[in-house]
Image (tube, rainbow, N blue to C red; front, top):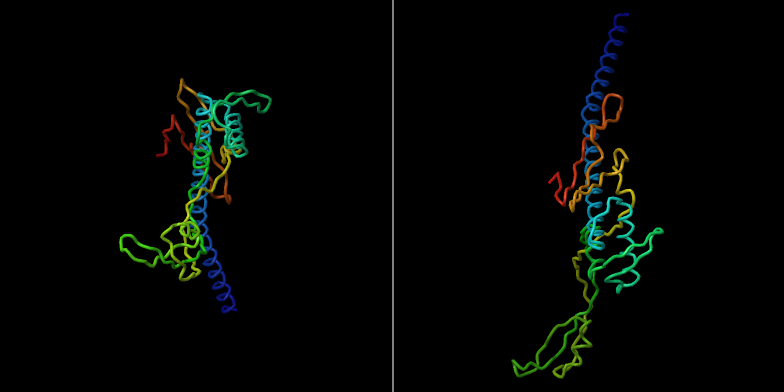
Length: 247
């Protein structure tokens, strides 16, 4: 009988140890996950504010004024980019009719490039390029004799027009790795104008010629997580006349 009681007591102790271990893991890793979530939302919110400021900057470039209605500014800026995609000569003073409204814009040369680099992420990729190495004979004035030269296959037709070209000795296919920089572009949409935490619109204010984009969170925002923990979000900052509060 005593052995049975002892075994039950040991089993209970082992169960308590396992439960304590699980609780310890829970209290260590759950807060870390919540902190990462808070950081993620903070970064996303600040990215959206930077996007709004970019939209407003392009709107000011086109119209010489900022716009407190951020969605209208976005529609104008995106419409200009779409028009340039359809017609690259769509430049200078233009009259647009958009969302039942008339607006005049002055589109500078290079607008589409600046737009794509502002609303895009610089990335790199490695492309495998298949080419042909051609060995040719050309006359060298410097050496006063024929010389052997290696060229890329794509330049062969041009070289053959040269009066110093003599003949082709060989062609050999080759592959090389080329590092290419490019922009992964995106087009701002209406979601950019709302805080990802509260879904409230960002504050766009104008004082004289100064533009300010600010987080709508004015007091600590809190959500319950797993009964014992909380997700917390504080004010994510602002951009005032181009200066970011978090830099």
